Image: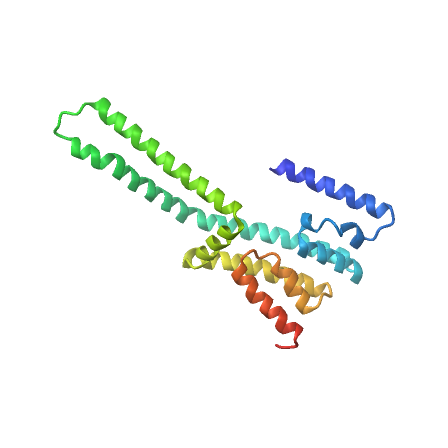
Length: 219
């Protein structure tokens, strides 16, 4: 995955350089590649060039990207332990259902060790199949935009996960908003650009409302 990303970045960079060498402005060169850097960062770079502060904006973007990675790492670290505990609890419960209860019921019936071993292997296979089906379902949800949005909305309503995710989203939002505003982009457009880093429809609707209020002159 990292090598593929590096190749894409190199290819993107070579296209931009070629266009600039042909006399295109940075804005014109990046016009068709906002999907590579993202809408927010592309607009920030263009605004930085127009304001004559491209070096400052690029430095700020780099700092912001590093901060995002740190926040993401911390978020993953905080979520890893409760997630592992949850899945271990599920696995233990399934093992109890498929093996331990049946093994206790067979005690005193003269069942041989090989039969118990076969029962254990069968239980493990069932647990693996259940987890595999769960992962396949997660992958399907991830690929289906509507289901994924509904899943994120559900997660946000779970206090421990929701608070951490909202914190991550809004830290990114205000970081990009600060960069956009310092680059000379209007408040309303800064909100619009910053909202592009948040992929949650529920939050985006509220941000869109705030953007419209700014456009209409409301505080």
